[in-house]
Image (cartoon, rainbow, N blue to C red):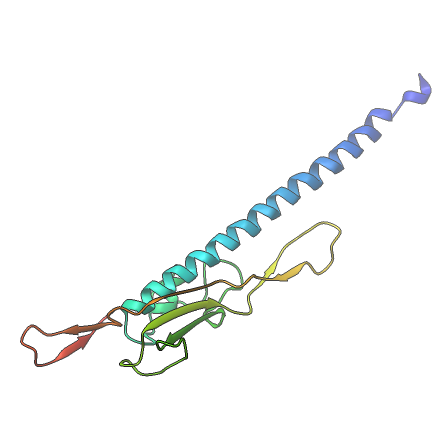
Length: 155
């Protein structure tokens, strides 16, 4: 019986370590999937906002990032407006800067790194996969007046 003393403590330590490793791994995987899904939603919101708002309107990126007008950070850690790129494209998918030539709008996530706390892996920072969406440009914020004399640009 003396040889068995403390064996339960050793068994508990082994089982608890494995259980904690699996639990924390599942939490980090869930956080990575949440980040992935949020980046996809940000791209979809940004491209939709860019298609109906004036070109390069200041509110497109903050609203796409689930924020308010004037916000500079997103809903996920370390995600900023610099990570969200908007492109206005012509019929050949070449970048343009003028309204008459714009046929498509593209939103992309660029240079965003996901920091995961993976056990036994040092420096577990991963660059996010490419997220982008392209849709036809719609009004781009242009609303003709009822009398045909002037137009307004609204978002």
